[in-house]
Image 1: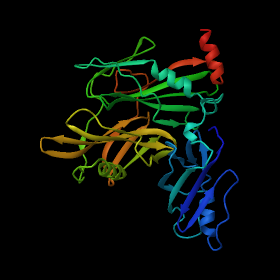
Image 2: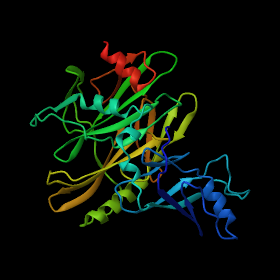
Image 3: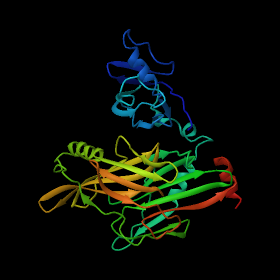
Image 4: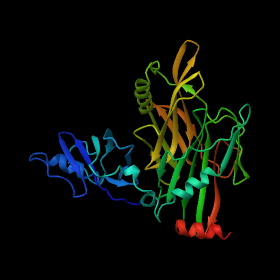
Length: 372
């Protein structure tokens, strides 16, 4: 994970009864009597990576815009650094992260493009490969879907393979139709460029990449079901967002690996995307993500839908892993998926290698690609 400088960004942590400010010169000294909170804050080792606060548990919050922002997060303290010898070594601690751009500085998200996309960044290549897709829904609409100009998530997965990856969204009439990731990794052999896609569309799709047929799911990508015991959708957009966030927290998910067994996935602290479709029957919607570290493994869509005079929340899952997956609502099993099948491009979820090159860096990739 490439580090970028703080510049003149100040980051403050409010943890329990102690507040800690971290800046380029390091943390301030807390008042006497709060060393326990100071130690708790320092254990998170929060850093700034490409405009996103990160910790050993994964990204905290992206920085959006020049205005100050306050975010409340709940994180697991690293297991290797227990808070104390109490009976609860894995307490969860709520942090308020205050992001302030000081006078004369710039927001991290507004750092110049050269710094954000330097020699170690694959982002321009990932964006280019996403833009080279042409996806057309079957049925009534013949509009060509294009990805949003920026990814909704950046991720890495050094354990299972994934030096750098970005998740993109293809949208039609305000609603996401396809979610896909472009990522790259290199083991002992050539550089691999790999794609993974999942249909979110109500119809089949036909996708080409660089003019060649690539993916052709022949059925709808999602199966929505009512959210058990959910409240009626609120009338205001801010209230609905709070409701959808609360609904997402009622779900949990896990993956099953043949060597490590069952692994609990982490629900990312906020929705990756919120949408307001033009369909009059669809009031509001959000896309949430369960991840392993920062690697997305399962997407959860929560939508407020209207049927006549009735409105309700419905949900659907979209797998984003080749592993066996399970999802629960308030502890009860509600969804599962078996081990995935690579290279079957007729499925609603598909993943495949598109290129293998002798390239270590983005510059190597561009040079080799140009010579082919």
